[in-house]
Length: 422
Ligand SMILES: Cc1ncc(COP(=O)(O)O)c(C=O)c1O
Image 1 (cartoon, rainbow, N blue to C red):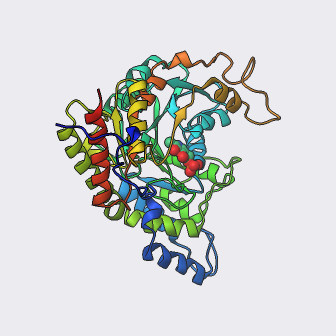
Image 2 (cartoon, rainbow, N blue to C red):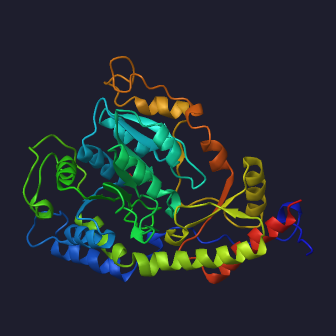
Image 3 (cartoon, rainbow, N blue to C red):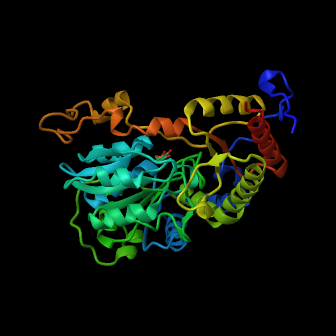
């Protein structure tokens, strides 16, 4: 088959106009969000607990989230990071405990254990771009109390293996679902697989409120501690109903409450998460995958834990080597196809970053003798696969505003560049 001249070499690009911005939740904002926001304004009830009437947005969101994710307890938070800090308090990790986190994750995955005085220990990723179960098992020590598993850009790793290893070693599993809200693993919603789950509703996320988060928990005591930590040690009426009897004495906490405006948008978004967002991204993803795999023999995609459960927000191609991926990305961008996911992660084992993040507060000592993590020394060779795997992938983001014509251009761009390879 004759190959077309690449735009990179002076040929006509597949697209001259940019693709729509790959925003997910915010791109489907509409009447539903406005109606609930209007109710908050008209009733003048922006605080979740009291006012002249009955505030119900955050409480309804938590109730519907419990049903959607099939988890017994749900706590809405002001940010996704806030839900992580509450998760740390909930599972009760602290000085002397180790928390295993993936080398490729978000800053919060490192900071949350550090802020409670626990020690993050890195496990490498596999080609799913999520934690490698074999390296997770290698990094377990008698001090390991919890593992944070990140689901990067809508898809899982081999969660059966992660859960099996964690259970065998009595390690609590925290799912970081910030970039995969609504994705499933073997028929179950992620967020309902482990002990605790954290979500972010920041602007780039699948469900978006600008900023916001959610914590799910299975165990009522873990949940009560998280609730208390999120609200200065208190349990207020709208949350008390979720765990009945109080088991935990009051303690100092932070303030990560979600307000009713955020709750209103979160509620409207949750109600249309499947119909307006995921049904669309998944349909586009399936069609793109079928066409590209038919027309690009040999092209490999990111191997995920359960392809059927993928949220469909990012089409990752695995070129097996960073140099080949970089060449492909450059040629595809020149064709007018935007390359890159809608929300990022980074190699957290980057030494400079880790050194900076270990300094918890200017008045506190960094990790070192006599401090948490005393015996931990970080260096990139602890997770040698991370950079190679991440840089071998090329991704095209998919979002609800994309039309069939946009997806046709993406497919034609990928096929054109693939066929032109020498
Ligand atoms: C994987 C992951 N975890 C946690 C967070 C933190 O969420 P937030 O920005 O809402 O605090 C993010 C946000 O980008 C994320 O991508």
